[in-house]
Image (cartoon, rainbow, N blue to C red; front, side, top):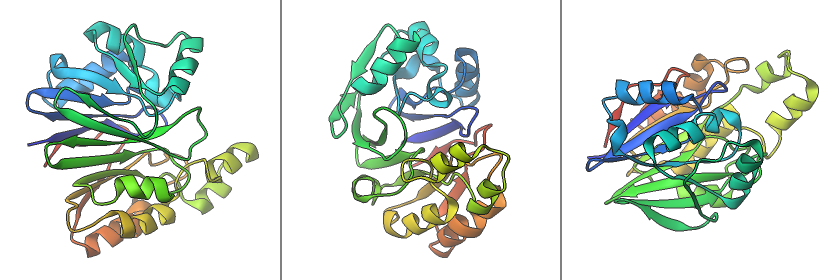
Length: 254
């Protein structure tokens, strides 16, 4: 059995924990060490089972608790060389770092990790497919588009964590500066609701059991809009789905 514990997702922090066979790993650590440990414990996961933190990219809503958490638990943070370089310049690099290149396959305990490049405005951003036995969990929380590389990795997973970040009309009429609006809506920005919904037609298969919609903007989106597009499509496929809120959601078992 594999358990997915979404600790929270949004502009104020992103993290989730995957557990199986008495071992766990975190994907991103976008909350403080204290908050990470509190949220992990609230899901019934023992902190001492954490073997590593996988980092998708260097933005602080994915890394703010990484250094202190990893140093506290004496575990490595796994990241690309580009991400490591940026965190090092910021003084946010943990004592233990394990580097990997996009496209690389590596092991953490009994988990097998496949890292793949995603189109996002970071130095060397990646998504992950985490395998445990025959179970595959695909994660891509920050990306401007679902291209062929992303599709090739995320299609046909047992569980999928995919961004559905913004509603285009809400973004246009938001108080955000124009340069930020262009960045978000660009091909290396974030995934808007209709693009996420369209991608689910391709990414989900008969194997898919769970879809978690992530990084929903607090200013430029509404859960109801995500439900109207991605949710409606998933309902038609009789798939279980949830929106990960900034406060997280209950755990899911596969």
